[in-house]
Structure formats: structure tokens, C-alpha cells
Image (tube, rainbow, N blue to C red; front, side, top):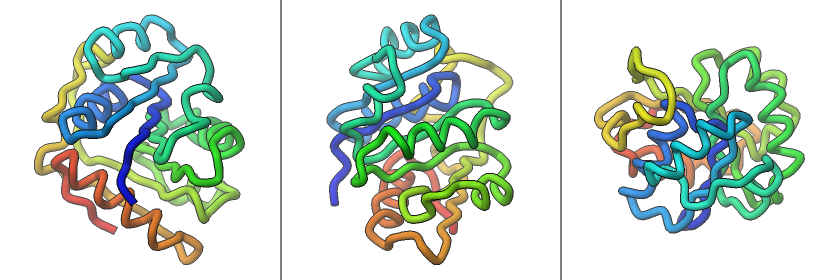
Length: 168
């Protein structure tokens, strides 16, 4: 199942880098949403998102894959919002550094697969995003028994296309 429509929720350093790397990898359309309109504008200006939108619902409603790249303290709430707003066909992942409590708290364990790229920078914000950030980086994925194999394959392939090494 090829990835055609990606949505990024949170366009800081990691979110913008995901968008830039995805565009380099050939993803046809990247929608983006950020609670900070300035971050979103910079991400769009840099080409990390094709479609900057003013609402989370508009960003995720047609996505094949949604990457939630918000601060760890807001991940649980944002992931719940995304799962409610996105279509049933959308697979949802995150880039947070903590996994156990988050994965346990997510109600839709079929569509959500936790993730964490082990990389980054001391820099912040979308202006510091880089399409090369994930090159050679380990990207942990946390499928569970309920994870649909097709969704895992989609996410695994996407992470690899960014230059990262996916590890379950």
C-alpha cells in the first residue's frame, strides 16, 4: 500500500524534518497542522508541508499516515484527537521519546503504532529542520498484538524511506 498522503501534526524540528525527508522520498502530498501558526508558516515556506491547514481535522481527514510530533506532555491528547479525526484508513504514529505509558493509554491499538527516532539537534523549530536528520538513525517502532500487519509494513517502509533504520 503506497503512501500518498502524509499529515504532520506539530511542525517543530522533528515534524519539519519528517516533512522535508518525506518530500525527498517522493511522498506526493504532505499536509501540516501546528497550534503555533508561525511554526506552520515557516514549515510551509521551507517546503516541509504542501498544505498548511488551520485545523487538526483538516490536516488528517484524508491522510494515509499521520505523524504526531508534538511535545511529549501533549502526545496522549493529540494522538487521541488525531485518531478521532482521521479516517479509518489512516495509520497514526508519534515521535515521542517515551513509549510504555503512551502506548498503554491509546485506545485504538489497531491504527496507532508508537515510534521514536533516535536523533535530533540542540536546535529548535521548523527553521532548523533537515531532510538529512534521519539518515542512519535508529527509529524504534512499537507494534502490539492488535497492530495490523499492513499498517506496520506501511510505517516501516516510510521510516526506511526517510533514511532511518526501523527497529521493532
